[in-house]
Image (cartoon, rainbow, N blue to C red; front, side, top):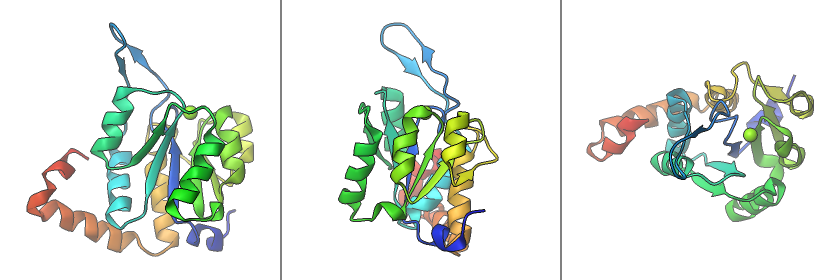
Length: 185
Ligand SMILES: [Mg+2]
């Protein structure tokens, strides 16, 4: 059981992409086209988080236009095409002026072990590799691509007693005339 103090101290959510924000499948189309399936529930959770200025960043080892498109749609910072995720996570901490202890990292496979090892809170999705689950402080109930990230956001926000305010912020943003893009959560 992870401590409330640890949950309360988290200030940024870093997520692996393949296997965490997706189920891990990649559809190969003609040419270089790749398709991926993202969860709308995760997307909405991310919107709630960023609405209350809680940064969410994505780290993807593989580069894909589909991921860039989804990240842009959700206004999350995307670091892709870099194999050393530990180095990327250290850079994220520096760029956001945060201690690594204040960063939550969500992963599913072996290439996530190193960044999980330096993050304040290490989370594995329900269908993560056994080594990744063993290294995690928290294992989500939901598998990757099926609301696991939403679950982590709700866990952190309830522990920090900011869920209700963040939800209000999101709902207010939907009512604003500038919110047309948010409808595509
Ligand atoms: Mg992965």
